[in-house]
Length: 296
Image 1 (cartoon, one colour):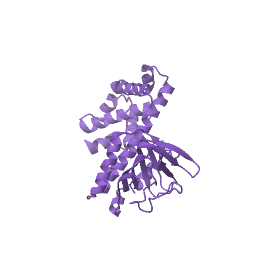
Image 2 (image 1 turned 60 degrees about the horizontal axis):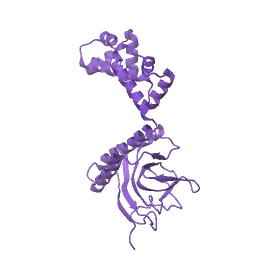
Image 3 (image 1 turned 180 degrees about the horizontal axis):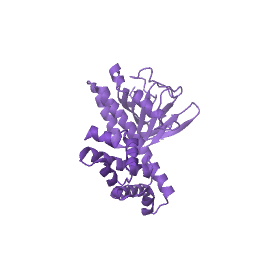
């Protein structure tokens, strides 16, 4: 019987040393299922803990990033609940999460995946970088992410020394890029342009005492709406952004020039040296004097 699939995947082991790195990769691969297939998944090559049947589903003991780059199919969150998945969808599977999926027989599909575990990944999900209720991220087919999967497959197949650390970096990058593409698709071009304009205004006027309210006025937006958009887009309020830039400038001046604390404070628009020291310590963990002693 002729195979109706093509495959390229690898299952990996890790040492205690690899686990100490914080992320270990246990599987990576790519598989194309042609339309009008007979069985899914193919019954060859997959260890028992990864194998499943669409009707019974499975629970993994690790994370997995499943990326559909061609075709479409169905994803089940329970035996009764399903949703369509299609090319450009990234599915983030968490440990002990029941799931099942299968390609549409009319189209088949090409799927890529990378599975991983570790304390570093646990902390990302624990700190809610990803919505627990969201499983599917419709990020589109991104060539740079596809290239990362292909690179991971190559590294895994070669299995050279320290390949786990290399693969951990790729898994981390794919996860970060998924967040990046998903997050940015929520903003239209006009919003992006306004926030970019605001950033330019802030940087050009940083030493002129500009405030967040001034920036809102310059881009013809109410302060409350500007603050909301800016924080949604950047993750910080405009006032925080301004202070952060000032502290970055202060760090450069303290470590790279003969300027004293008073001169740096006034240069950055802080009239009160005590307040400057308080803000500096809040952002860096050091007083300006301590920082200059360490890094100058």
